[in-house]
Amino acid sequence: MNTESDIYKMTAKINNARKAAKAWDHPYEEKYVTDNFFAFQRGKFFVATTNSHNTQRITVPNTAFSDGEQICNIFWPSDCQTVKNSSVEVVLEDAEAKIYLPKTNSFFQDGFINEVEQQEIGNDDDQVVEKKQDFLQE
Image (cartoon, rainbow, N blue to C red; front, side, top):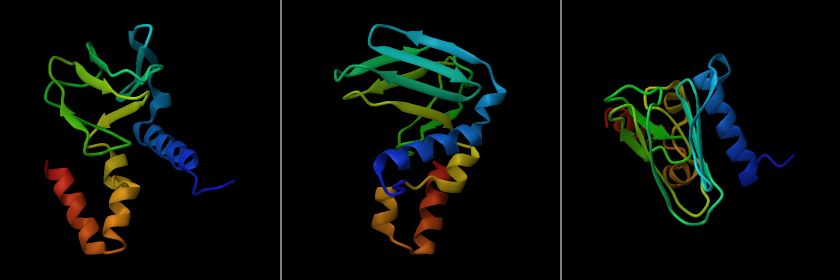
């Protein structure tokens, strides 16, 4: 098993997010379905996918998130939004998928810096702490 491969890292990130959200403790709920877009939720673990390379812009209503709650994409933690009317604004480009969790979830507390940011910062613990504090204060 190649633990340095992109697919391994992506799967590990998904599993860590699933564990942090305790998704298994919540029922599966379809939230929005079209020919090219699919969203579901397990508690506050929200998944949006597409089978299209065309941009998908969907407002998903009636999510489990509260008005005013900040949610972030596990793959790009700077991709955050504030929930309005229990709805999530999803933009998927080039067949991407997104998984949103509340910004306060332990997933972001424990490992929010993506690989690109980590490479830019290196192993400078002070910069890691500073980036984490900046993220949590936004």
